[in-house]
Length: 164
Image (cartoon, rainbow, N blue to C red):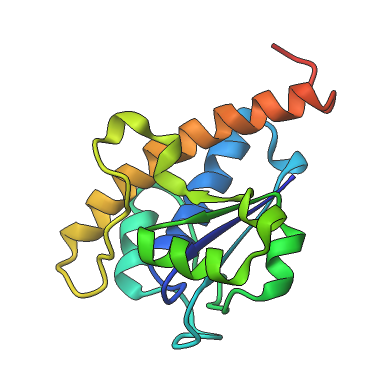
């Protein structure tokens, strides 16, 4: 299974989502069954590491994303990934504009996997203060747990995961 997280610049929300979700997969022992990546709808930060504030905030939670580099989502990604998860409605709209009908079925908002979060979009912390990154991480962790539940269910359905 392949999952892609998408935000605008691929230096804050989507790399943090990638890191948090990788950690959740490791915690559940299914990281070897899922490929995870992140990208941005813009090309502003291609090749750059995640924002230093994002790296600091996620490091406090024991996750290192310093090796990630920004990249722009491509039309090829729409075929390559089983799930493409946008951080907000604008990025969702941008992704759907690239997608054909079949590809569009795999594009969703990430917070769809955290219905109790009370919001549907992950706010962009880029222009805010440092504490905004912690609030975003709380949302990403809630969604990562819901997504991991979904992935485990799908892997069981496919016969790739047999434990309870």
